[in-house]
Every structure is written in C-alpha cells, then in structure tokens.
Amino acid sequence: MPEVSDFLDFVMHKHQNRIAEPQLPDDIAKAWAKWFEEVARLEVMTNEPESEYQQVLLNKYRQ
Image (cartoon, rainbow, N blue to C red; front, side):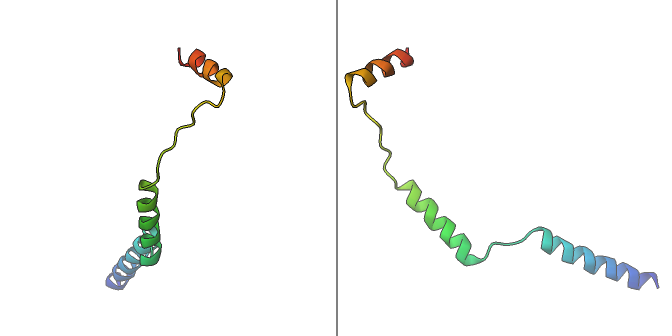
C-alpha cells in the first residue's frame, strides 16, 4: 500500500509546515503596528550640557 504511505507522508509534511510557520493573531499584529506608529511620532530630544564643565568635556571628546 505505497499510496497510503505516500498520502500519510504528504499530510504529515503539510501539517509540519503549518507548525513551522506560525501566523501572528490579528490583535497582536495590530498592537505591534500601533506601537511602531506611536514610536515614529516620538520627539527626539537632545541633552544639552548643563554646565560649562560638561560643555568642555563634550568639546574635548568631539575633537
């Protein structure tokens, strides 16, 4: 009965492919998409030196 064996191999192979490539549920995918959109809108802040000493150090290491 090689046909039965071939069919079982096919079914097992098909099932293994589904397990190996899981799909994210829609709610998780939507949550990640929302997070990425919010992060893209964040304002980038620079830290300005608070004292003359910090400014001197920054200038030294930038050279």
